[in-house]
Image 1 (cartoon, rainbow, N blue to C red):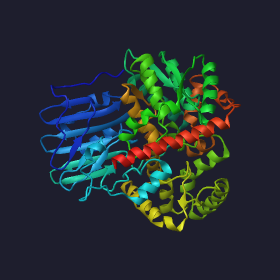
Image 2 (cartoon, rainbow, N blue to C red):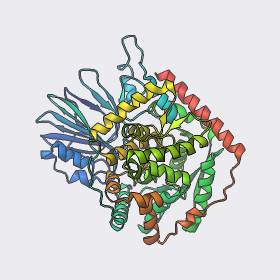
Image 3 (cartoon, helix red, strand yellow):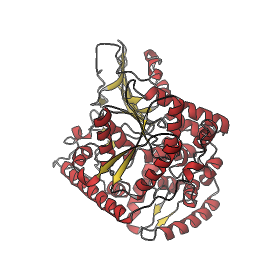
Image 4 (cartoon, rainbow, N blue to C red):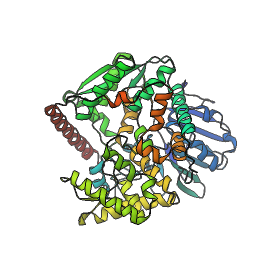
Length: 538
């Protein structure tokens, strides 16, 4: 189990600034270590803190630090200050879930988790913020900005898996995701190692003598976590947050969660959130992650209610699993199959002629399906494919074909080409990194920040760099195409004796269209309020 903040000296927060870089984090660190030669500070929640405790920072090279970052589970910002050489190494997690911002004033660049403290600094000579039109359009499509930018020209997001190195001679930035991982698909090893990591993250991530909550939807991810926690003999409460009024997914998930919880012998606790009565939450929530927005009221109110009932809790959640294993399209429908195919190496590694034929077929199917949406084209050229992964429609990589979107496509093309160059044009690395860009969108971010606001400890066992690298090296793309998340389903069957058909049979939820329309109306109202707050700050 994780301990409280560790300190190996009297200092509560080391100085992490040099002439070339200033790192300003306004939250309490989860781990501190110092000597006469260095200061180390880790912020966020690292489940496997032993990796830090056992690391020899006395002689820390850049490559060793990079390897350390890749071995950590959770969400974090890790900062190492070499006092002898005046060098700073600063890195974030693979997923970018510990949100950081970067600003270069031409003198001393700043990395911070609170963009509001830079708000005045990033204005131009006339006291105004300059905006990027392409980012504003992207934000309108996805409700978050691209991984390395915000809508404000002078302010950047720190990209997922970023490593900054500041020395007396300059500052460099690298994406530390491994470019080349030798693929050796091995089902037995993959399933076993994948489970060991997930189980370890649960055991190590939970605080002692704290109420354990599992956010339970009855899907493969949360069912897997429930079975693992039962096997570990951990006491926990499966909780479902019910929207009032609900959207379609919430109705289906409640039906599924109730059925699967009963099958597992668990008593499902339901928290009902009346959305129209909790607009008071938006003002606080929207101010910090202003370049991301979401229908945050149910989650925020649910975490608030958990604090009222049980105090500060451990909250376990299966977030990120879908996208790590299957880009998110983990359903067993034809549409999900097509989306998995087009985002896989099975498609991207085919000859251009084959890709073009597949793209035309998929394009026809989806343009018919999305008639009311803007016309889209499925990319098949290598450079366009990266752009499409950066700017998907749902989980499907697409290219906008309107004439007035040429500058937008060129803008995203420059970003995707920069990422590809950083990753040395490794196909598997680029595709996985685009997933990480997608995963740093609003959902994970607000889980982290809402949990922190109410003093909860958030444990997302799938959020682990080692699970990402394991998936790249040992998952069979062909098998994943036909049997999504097979590593989890096989463990459910073989390790826990759980038949996934139980989940598949959870059909028949009655969806009230009047209620779902009311949800859509309230959701639009939430976003309007979000925009009002954004305008007041920018």
